[in-house]
Image 1 (cartoon, rainbow, N blue to C red):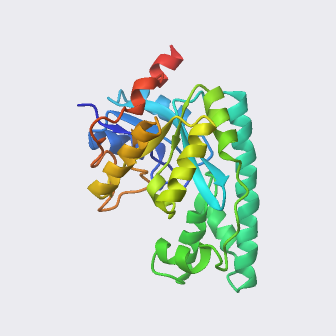
Image 2: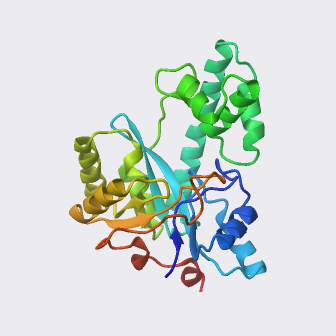
Length: 284
């Protein structure tokens, strides 16, 4: 049985493993098909292709990206799978997203500095290195300052809505992200739908709009997930005529979340992998 993990991150966004480390770990954990889906960037894909070829890894790579969008008052993430990373429309959108991310980061840094946490932006940039800066980098910088014990604590105290360092996002809308993914030959997937802290009624509204603007699939299975949640999401995917995806949303090793761990679809769900072109096929 093929093991798919279709949501993972590297140090090109807010993951903690390099491309090489992620690929080696995926192979070690028995993953057969891995999608790298960094936030608003595809910078990891080319080095990943080279590494797999150079080291003859028994691993199929799916070129992906996770695009941040704005819907109502929610930040909704759309994963693009099997995209052409050289597509002009996708490239232009990601460049715009990256500029918005940098502007937001500077505003977060300014707000924190006004409350006495000076230099946090500079430290977050250092931690991000060549990657796209995210709130996770700010959280890591604040943990270093000793203001909270862990990243979750920092988000709760400083970066959540109505907190000191919260800055509303200005991301594109879902239709724009989905159109860019489609133009790049990819499949658009609603990422981790159970995480948005919305009621079932609102989730159905989200799925309706996602489908109406061209959305094709939704994540159904993740490692740390109650069976009833997986079943519910599987039922929703069938109800709305959406393909089903699965992914760990791996950022770094932790006891309860691992590449390829506990990933399977409920009965009767139609796997998204049946409907894309692989990297190998695309490059032939």
